[in-house]
Amino acid sequence: MNFIDKLSAAWTRNDSLLCVGLDPDLARFPAHLKDQPDAIVRFCKAIIDATADLACAFKPQIAYFAALGAEDQLEEICSYLRDTYPHIPLILDAKRGDIGATAHQYAREAFDRYGADAVTVNPYMGFDSVEPYMAWKDRGVIVLCRTSNAGGSDLQFLDVGGLPLYQHVAKLVAGKWNRNGQCALVVGATFPEELAQVRKIIGDMPLLVPGVGAQGGDVEATVRAGRTAGGTGMMINSSRAILYAVPQEGEDFAAAARRVARETRDEINRYRG
Ligand SMILES: O=C(O)c1cc(=O)[nH]c(=O)n1[C@@H]1O[C@H](COP(=O)(O)O)[C@@H](O)[C@H]1O
Image 1 (tube, rainbow, N blue to C red):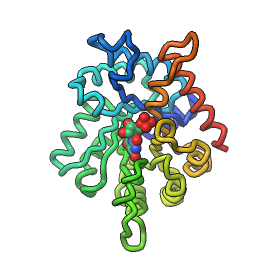
Image 2 (image 1 turned 180 degrees about the vertical axis):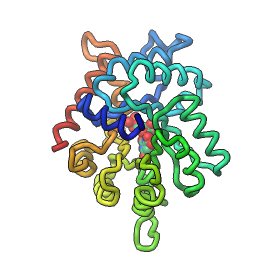
Image 3 (image 1 turned 90 degrees about the vertical axis):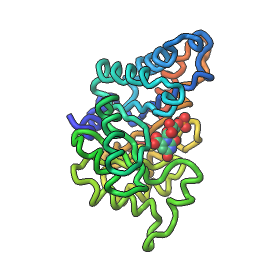
């Protein structure tokens, strides 16, 4: 099953547009895990098990692993995800961008080494830097469009032939670049007006929408702006707010993560229409 079909099936099966981000930060781990050699694997597996029935996707952020030299732990987590929850898409957040020959190596890393269903990429270097990922026709290529950070406006709002650059990217990716129907776009939940503009341009193409939770994006505004007519079309990502939810009485970290994931999923569903 290709990425888009797998995502559609996960939206339905778990009645969820919530993407759980896996951004493991040892400094924020529970004390009993911090000193364990396999702390990252144990933490991420516990989060995955606690939220798998509430999520439409999982999104490990590669920098959190690579910074610690923990790529082997990322591999183990990815293979656990693929084996245990094969119906849930695995998105590798790597935001890669490079010349074609190098991009091909990044694609091998994402799709062959980690077995990701989709990867995030940066469009700044143009089509020949994105095309190598498309050789894996059953995988998704998720292109940065209007990112969630304030500084995204520095370039993404520049006027290009009468359109802000991010809208130009949306048109390109939904049109010429989407040869195999495997593309999606990243638009931050922190910018619901732009999210609505992008949705108008791209039809039903899926959107990865980070920025609810720790970055303060408004869930209602996000869902109303980004949903498709069918009430889907988005992977709304939350990472830190779920991973580091403060346990209430009787909860461990995984139960707290589950509670916040459920609340977030349910809040999203309230506005899907
Ligand atoms: O591509 C992404 O996932 C991404 C794009 C973007 O515009 N903004 C953004 O925050 N992200 C990622 O989404 C996650 C957001 O994490 P939280 O702010 O903790 O929910 C991080 O892993 C970011 O790297």
